[in-house]
Length: 345
Ligand code: A3P
Image 1 (cartoon, helix red, strand yellow):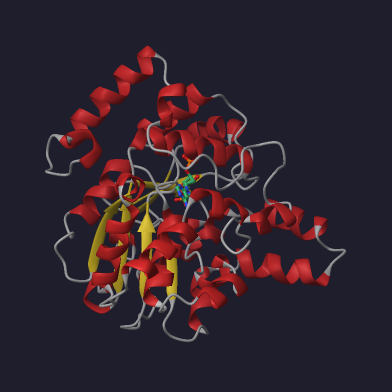
Image 2 (cartoon, rainbow, N blue to C red):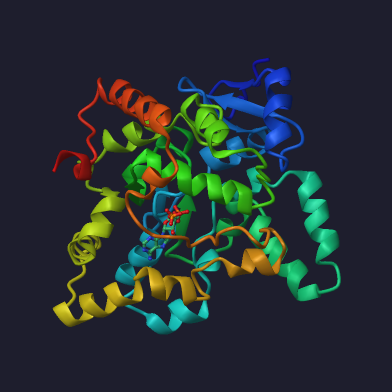
């Protein structure tokens, strides 16, 4: 069925219900089905259709800063880096205001099925504060952003083609990409951790959904390529997770330049310490513990801020998957000059 909406010049088609039912057996947080969007066929929960127009047509401000990525590419790390650099290293505010409030997550609400929303609401009904927090976290990002003072910092995993078309002419974007093999391991753990996804299958099955573009925000390479094509645009800064991992100080200097900021060596060293994985794990303002407090994530799985290493995929991939990954990556990199710097060294 073509769900084309006059306010969004993108074709939205339902994923075949039989296939959707098969996927939902393993992804227990979704209860209706999925759609594919636009010429690239980006894959989303059904609820995307409710938000598509509000997102595509959201009014932008020239002070807006987007941090965008395919999920699990180092978004949170980049968000804090960007926020600190753009806000004159305001450690006090960074500690006082959680990242989730500093950066509304534009489309998170599309992943929260009404059945899950009802469950979370019932479970937190004993506390007014928790209900308020829950509402803040799961309300549509566009609603939250409309009343937010400038400058607004916005987290999104949407590819450029589903965002307002004038975005780069108006606002700034920092895009971060990561080796898809590490992304898939990391996203697998998150899909088990977070009840809105509720994944109960094994890793290999998950991997196949991912490379066959049957997973949220895929196709993965199309997502990256859209941003990569704009990497020379003055309002877009393209980063790699592996670049942050290898030389964080250098990346901080790149980000500072992008925001026309000039920091001393001492300030940069202090910021890199603040951004280290150990500090991140213990930093309540960035570590998403709020999701655990609200019961949106389960206990017993690895935490949102997990290993923080490049190359960990090797522990998860058998020989067959390693070969599949190689040819999948080769095929997708054939028609582009996008290259992962850590694979070129
Ligand atoms: P792993 O699961 O491989 O550890 P996102 O923020 O886009 O969801 O990405 C999450 C990934 O970034 C996770 O990867 C997480 O551990 C890693 N990460 C978060 N903060 C980090 C930091 N300060 N240093 C290194 N990696 C970090």
